[in-house]
Length: 116
Image 1: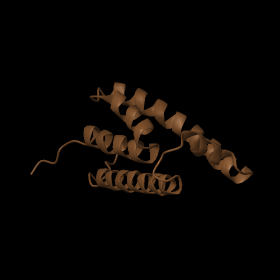
Image 2 (image 1 turned 30 degrees about the horizontal axis):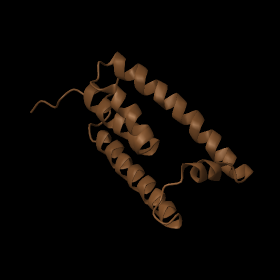
Image 3 (image 1 turned 45 degrees about the horizontal axis):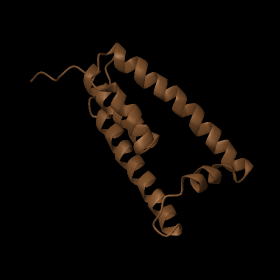
């Protein structure tokens, strides 16, 4: 089997940074609309404002559940440390941050070190 280049892990890290940054940015903009407050009820209600929003919401939650299950199973299979942290980061920051971060560390775990 052909091995993937080790620098692919850094693409996952890049996606994690972008995902976390954009998630934080849009939550920050939402808080500005709410006079500096994070309104959980308004946040959840906004996901049901139209059929398009509902489509994205169900798409997100289905993918998030599958990805979360994958993180737990794969993390334990590979004996990765602190797998629970990726689940916590999903809820604290966002799935767009936590899942690519998990993939970064997973790739580091499964990629053999380069021998010079």
